[in-house]
Length: 113
Ligand code: AMP
Ligand code: ZN
Image 1 (cartoon, rainbow, N blue to C red):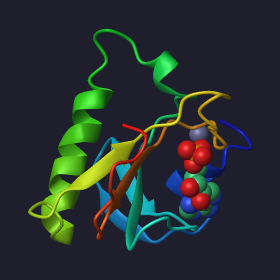
Image 2: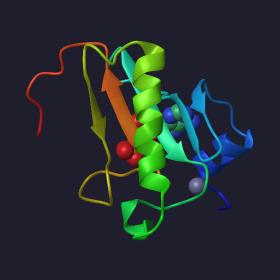
Image 3: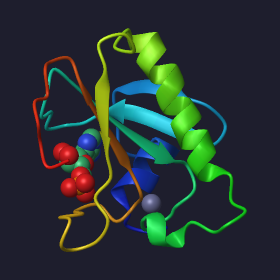
């Protein structure tokens, strides 16, 4: 997808601090971290947001399996973490390439959910 910053991160055109990669998924550090650990997990293929996911598409299991691996790799699996997805305008989605925020590394308290 042209002019998509996360597609450009996948292609290497824009640099990122990579945390995890497999054939379908890339994870990198958020530029503006909201917690000691703030990682973005994205499909390498462009999806605008979760509204583009189809019934028999295996991308969501791949993303959550990647999150499972990242939690263990980065060592926050025992302490716990939060996964957040913003979809569309009311949620404040600013980058129109589907992404999941992993927030960890501190007590997150009772947030919005
Ligand atoms: P959202 O508001 O859910 O669309 O989140 C977009 C996130 O992408 C924000 O947390 C930004 O800090 C992050 N972000 C934007 N550009 C980059 C970039 N080039 N590298 C890493 N994170 C980015
Ligand atoms: Zn994209």
